[in-house]
Length: 459
Image (tube, rainbow, N blue to C red):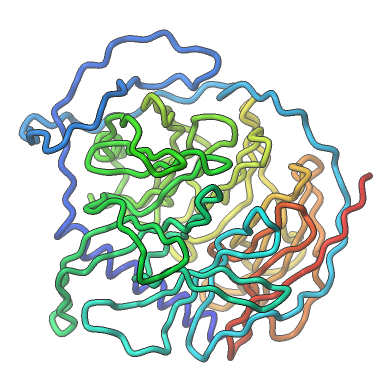
C-alpha cells in the first residue's frame, strides 16, 4: 500500500509541477468576439452556441485587446442525438482469479490504455523510472503493444510522460500519442520551456512522425472505428481523417468558456475528451483538480456547437457505452484530496436521467471511491475498481466490482487476495469480444498486469 501511496504522491507532484510551469509559457490568448449567426436547433443536436465551421486560418492576427468576457454555454437538452442502435441483451458474467501476466522492472509503472480490435493485444504505457534520465527528457515512458497470452511486447514509441493515454488507429496499425517537447530544462532552478506535440508511430520508435506542435491541450479523441481524430490547436478544433489528412476545422477558444467565478485562480484547465459512438458529439470535460471545479460540455466536432451538462459536480473519467446510448463517468464534488475519484454515475442521453451508483456496500466503514471503470459488452453492466480509505491518506483495500446500473446491484467479482492493489487511471480494459479483462494489479513491492478470464451467460 505504501508503494501505491508513493505513486500517487509522485503523480501529484508531477501535476503540480506542470501547473506551475503552464501559466508561465502557455498563457492562452482569446480571439476577438464574433457575433454568431442565429440558428434553429434540431432534435439531433444539443441546443448550443453556434461557432461557425470554417477552414483553418494560419497566422491569424492577434486581437486579444478586444477579447470578450468568458460566457456560459446554454444547458444541453435531451435527447442529445438520435440513438438507432437496439439495446443489447443483459448477460451474466463469471470472472476467474487474476493471473499475473507481466511484471515490471523495479521502479517502473504500467498503465493500460485499451484492447486492440483483434482481442489479442493491449495498448499500454510503461513509466521508465529505472533508466537514467536525460537532461532534456524527464519522465521517459514507453508505448507498446502487449499480448497477455504469449507475453510478447512490441515497443512503438518512447515519449515524455504526459498522463494522457495513447490511442490505436486500426486502419493504419499505428499508435497516436501526445507528448511534451522540452526546449530547455533547468532542474536546479526549477524552470523549463516546452511545447505540447502530437505524434504517430507505425511500429518503429525511431521512425515516429510529428503531426502537430504548440498544442494548447494534450488529449485527443478518436471516433469509433478510427475514421476521424480530433485535437485542439490554437483556437481551433483540428481534425484528421483515417489517413491522417487534415479536414476543415471549426473555431474554438478554451478561455471563452472558463466563466465560473468560483474557480480559485486562472490556471488553464486541462480537458479530456470522449467521443460518442456513431455521432459527431464529444464529451469535453475538465476534472476540477485545479481552481475549485471543472466543466462538463458536449461539443459537436463538425460544427463547433456546444452546450453544458450540469449534474452537481464534474467528471473525473468518462466512457460511452458501445451503443452510444449511455455516458458513464466518475462524478466528483471534492476540491481537496482525494479528488481523483468519487461516485460512479450513468447518464441516459435520450431521457437525461442520471443514475448514481453505490459500488461498495455502505456497511463497509471508510471513505468510498471509484478509481476506474469499463463498460461490459451488454451496455448494462460496468466493471469498476472501488477503494476504501479509513482516512484521507490511508487506503485500506481495493476491489473489482460488477455493477448493474439499471437495478443498482453491485457485487465483488474477484475475491480479496492479499497483496493485490488494483490501481486507478486507465488501468482496466475489457476485450471487445468480452472474453477477458486486463487490469493493473501492483503489489507493495512490484508493478504488475493481471489477466482475468470471463465467461458470458445470457440471462
